[in-house]
Structure formats: C-alpha cells, structure tokens
Length: 465
Image (cartoon, rainbow, N blue to C red):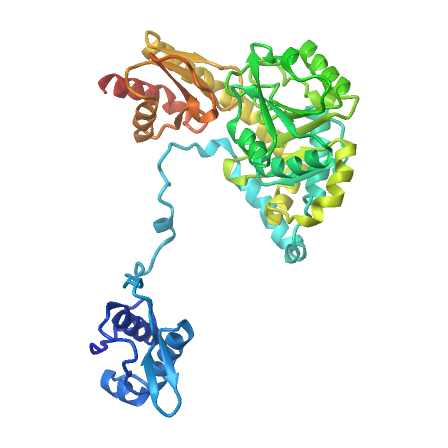
C-alpha cells in the first residue's frame, strides 16, 4: 500500500479519518491492495502516517461497515473480496462549494422580478414560521390544508362564479399529479374512456393512457372541442380547456358550454375543465367557468397557481363533484400530500390578506403591455415571414415562422439570447406544414423595456442563420 500523506486539515474538505478511508479504499479498488492481503495494524499505520490510533480505527471501521475490509479475530484486518466490476472513482468534491455551483440554469432565460412581489410572499412566509411553526411539525392533510382550501373556495366564487365547499377541494403538486388521483376515481366509477382535445395537452393524455384508459381524440374548432363527435350512450370523461384552449387559443362560447353540459348529463359522463390561465385574459373580463354553469354535478374543475404566482410554487387544485368526493374519501388514505405544507399555509395567508387578488390585477396590466409590445415588435421586424396567433390571453403566443431552419434550431438560437421558445409540437400539436415552423413564444418573463430589442435581435439572428 502506498504511504498515506494527510492533507492539512485547515485546507482540506475532509477530516483525517475520511482522508485515510478514501486512500485505503482507492488502493483496494485500484488493485494495489489485493483480496486477503493483510493491512497494517492500527498502531503501525498510525506511527507510519504520524496520525493517532483513533483516526486509523475510525477509518478501518468505516471500511468494515462498507465491506471493503474484514476483521479476523486474533489476526488483524484483511482486504475483502470485491467484485471485478468495481472501479476506482474520483470522489473528490469542490473545495468550499457555494450555492451557485448547483444552479446551472440560472441566467439561461431572461427574467423579470416585477412579475411577482416576493416581499409580500416573504412576509406571509415569516408569519407561518413565527405564528404557526407548530403546524409544520406534522404532515399536511392528504387533501390539502383546510385554510388554503377555504381561501380557494372564496376566491373562485368571486372571480369565476364557482360555488364549492372546502370538502370538494383537493390540492396537489401540479395538474398531472391530481389527474393520477382522478384516474383512480374514474376507474371506480366504471369509466374507462377519456376524450381529449386534438390538438391538446399531451401530458394529461399520457397520464390517462398509462393507467389503461382508452383515449379518443376529438378535433378542436374555433369554438372549442367538437361536441357532436363525443361518444354517446356510454359513460366517459372529456378533458377540455374552454377558456383558452391549448395550443389553438380557441374559446368555447356560452352556447357550446351549455351543449357540452347537456352531453355530460345525457350520457352519465364527466367533464374535466382545465382553467389553467383564465385569469390572464386581456380583452374583456374572464369568461365564466363551466363549473359555475353546472347544475348536474358533472364537472371536475382544475386550477393552478403557477401562472399567477411563480412557476416554482407547483400548487394546483381540483374541485370534485359531490359524488366523486365520497369516492376520494374512501381512497385518500392510500396517498400522502405532495405539496409543501409551509407553502400551502403561506399561500393561504397571501390570499387572506388580499395580496393574491392585487397581484393578479397587476399581472393583467403588465402582461397585456408585454403581449402588445411583443406582437408589435414581430409585426415591425418580421411581418413578411412570421405570423403571430393566439394573442389574447395567457403568458405566451404562437409563431408561424417561414424558415428552412428546424423548429429546434430556431428555439436554440432564441435560448442563446435568453428567450424561452419551444416547438409547438412539444404540446402535441403536429402541424402539416413543411415550410413554416410553429413555435410557442413566452413573453411574460422578458422585462417590458427589453422586449422590442430582444425580438429585433432574435429576428436578426434567425435571418443570419
């Protein structure tokens, strides 16, 4: 075995016994110490390395615990049998690592801190830690914190016309996770077919397909999903986003909404309404939710805070019809809550203090300005080869780019400028257009005063390529 030379503890990232442990482990894995070869005694190795016997003993004990060496009574320590597939690995770690070493995506895209008031969020978070710390010593309710469920009911009634009780609200980490709960409920109800919008939100389709549901893709028109093509005389579910269909941006008019509710009632079916960014509508008032029109208790309502707070929050919720609440009550013991209890309580206070409503009002004004600025910039710099669509709501709009570059290449060029652009095909929208590339352009995190310059630079970069 090679002599062990300890590193000065002042500059080393590891204590002496860890250094010795790594040294001997490396000698074993590299083959310098062979199977059944005897190691020096504690006292001998301590003297040779000018370290204490205690340090050697700690290193040997760690090697014993991990199975690299074996102790034989009245004999000493020997190298254990190690599989020939074992290889020596560099176990070094950065000296004095800093937080920024582990945030490689920071700065990848432009960001605008004006889109959210983190100081008010911090104030509510501090209240949770100062006044409700005892609540954090226990796991969160599987259904979500009662305080937040109550605030959600209050807000939906005033803003979306949805009347619900806290018992109907289920909170989870994203719509996809809630859909997993829903899939089990539908199975218990005897529903094994889910109709989805085509084009539509692919991740939701995958959740249901992975759980054995038959998927029926229903075409989308300018008035939303084609109701006349939904199955009849069979219990099924249909997933729709009537306020702002993704990715076409179509809005379901009031007549079609009542027709869809009638279809659900006549066919003992369930409507899954995803109202993901209905609050961010910039022309007129937000359109009433399907759930608010439902008198037959056949609509499951999905909502999310990611667009109206900040994406990292990952708090979503669904409102279940009464008949589905009873089923969930019977199965919820099989699950645990996936949302941070501290963040749920912070959000409840944020809503109770009126900050959430204030933030939405501010976002509507700011995002409306950003959307207009972005649309104007594309019109000014590239109207001859780029068309913008779906520019009435949300945090993004669609681009149809007349270019021989691939959609992925166009997006990569955008990312080098800090712009968040993805191919429309990522959302499940396959466009039969070989000449034009269809992209989703996110404008919400570009500072308002930089939008014109950023889009001009993007257009120039696309032209240059």
